[in-house]
Amino acid sequence: MASKILIPIDFHVESLNTLKLAMNHLETYEVDVVLMYAEDLDNSITELLFYNPKKIIESHRTNEFDEAISILKNRFETRIRSISYAIFHGYRVRLIEDFMKSKEIDDIYLPKSYQLQMPKKGFDPIPLIKKSKLHYKELDWEAGVYDSEELQLNALFIY
Amino acid sequence: MKTQLKIALVLILTNVIMLLLLGGSIYYFLYNYSYTDFYKRLETRAKISAKYNYDADKIDAQSFKKIRDENLEKLSEERDYRFEVKSEDDLSIIAQKTTLPLGFLKEILNKAKSTLQVNETFYTGIRYNSNDRQYIVIVSAKNYYASHHLIFMRNIILVAFFLIVIFITSLSFYFSKHIFDPIKNITDSVRQISTDNIHQRIEEKYNDNEISQLISTFNDLLNRLETAFETQKNFVSNASHEFGTPLTSIMGEAEVMLMKERTPEEYQQSLNSILGQAERLNQITQTLLYLAQTGYSNKKVNFEILRTDELLWQAKGIIDKLNPKNNIIIDFSLLPENPFKLKVMGNKQLLSLAFTNLLSNACKYSNNKPVNVSIASSDNQVFLIIKDQGIGIPESEMQFIYDPFFRASNTRHFEGYGIGLPLSRNIIKIHNGLLFVSSVVNEGTTVQIKLPLANIQKY
Image (cartoon, rainbow over all chains, first blue to last red; front, top):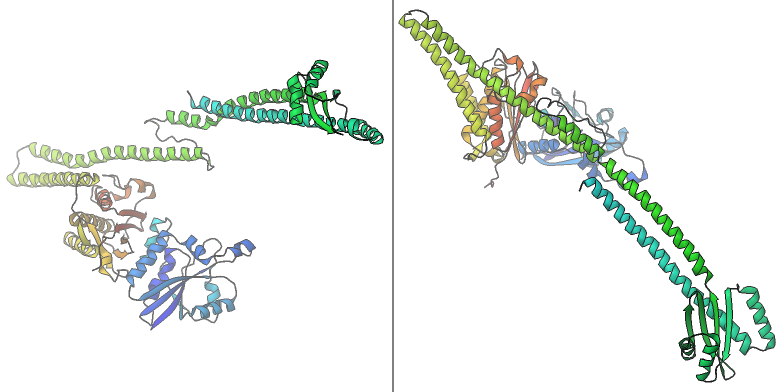
């Protein structure tokens, strides 16, 4: 049996710590991971016409972020069955509940003290999740300061 | 030839050629058009004239004439010639009468239509058959339009041409002179920079054009040059200091001993201390030699497949022997499940030397506080993170930490001579890896090493 978990991300390596820590709390051995990124949907007609979720994800991914994901994949090679991305648009509690239902998410893991540092247009979905009736678990680690791009990866190596 | 002049000449030449083509073709085509058009007008008049003279009955003839007089513009020096031609012999009589060339008349008769130009007068003649008789009708006129309008237009084109050429010439010279102004400025300011004032920079303009890119490239180059100069200066002063200290103490020891007669124990003690200093000197030269060897990559190094976690344990073993009080914690929380993801191509001695150096630095500068070592691997790299809680490196000195013999200002109380880090970095570089150091004073230093994974088959 595999479960499906959802982790909100901001495309900074540090937000992946939630996933790293979540692996210790899982009830099942195998897991499918959905990385959720929340963004405001532009309401201009041209933006909507050329709407492409893949490209949005692509534009935010950095080398360090991809490296960090592949580190985690290698660490849990037999446990992580898949890692996929999902974009969430919307501000309403009902919407996020429906979103979870449609993605068939079993568990939601949120960072406790780490504040998501969303890129431009993105917004932090955690308050919305907390407001909803969804069940979630919070994980905590000591947040650090990782300014330069090369050192961002250090964020994953916390103790 | 200067580039400036070249650009100006090319600009002028292309513009003049284009102008000439434009003006010339306008004049040429209009000239041609005005002639064919004029001949056509004359032909129409000849036809009308033939019609009302030979063909129509009297009333029609009157109205034809009236229409012609009322509606057709009178051409300058317009004249009609009408002749009845019974045989070809009549033509020579007509030619004599009208002073028209015989060939022209013959052509009218044979081809039913012909044109002729004598000086400024144009002739169009047609053959006309009516009531079994044959006539030749010729209309002649001066082409006022061609002779006046065309000349007027030619003059306009010529004047405009010369005006535009003058304008283009001055503009081209101005343009070619001033487009190189920024480059000339750069040349001037770079010329002023020498080894004495290498800290000077060219003033940067913050827009994204080629010139500012050139300026920032120059400034980058100067930055690197300045760092290189600085490194060299630092190296000389640091190296002489490092070599000087043991030598001074050897000399001092020997001088004190030679002052008066000593007991054998005192000699022994002093020789021991001299030996210690000499050993230290030897060690410095040894590591320096290592540094020089690793610095030049032309020397062949033997590579084999190694497991990074094994190397790490080995390095920890060495540190345990040298410094039993160390507190190194190896963290395997991100260790990949697949051991193939830990294998790199490398030289065992060198990599082990680098890891030992880095680990002993971490222990030394943190007074044996915990040192965390993590190991992880992505799909093509192995990551090693060595994190201590030591004294850190001041931010202003970060740029010099890879200089041989450089020691940060807060390391006075620690033994060492500043070769370990540059040596480790050289070793990692030989392995096509990367080494980053980040540090906060009094909080600790983190060293990140990236080594490329060995390209081996899984089975």
